[in-house]
Image (cartoon, rainbow, N blue to C red; front, side, top):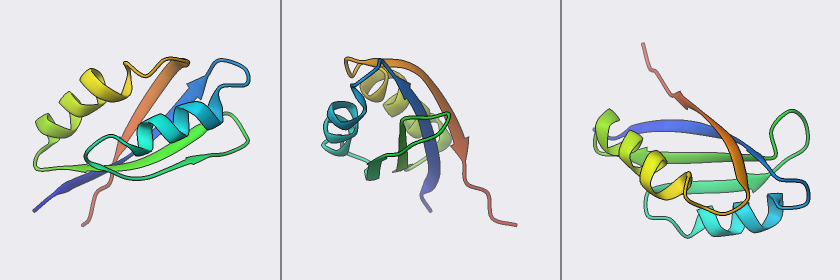
Length: 78
């Protein structure tokens, strides 16, 4: 069973489209959209475990130039 999460991203001014496009190329990213509001990009990602998902966020997503802050929200099913 895969673990999924939404990643809410704040970017430098004017960088949201570039960031969304770069993140869309990362393995494990299901969808990456630039949006308006308190966050600039919202990503839906998946991994084989919480650890694998967290590792992807830290090593790949957060290394994309233009990102200032991320918030990862795991999807839960009861």
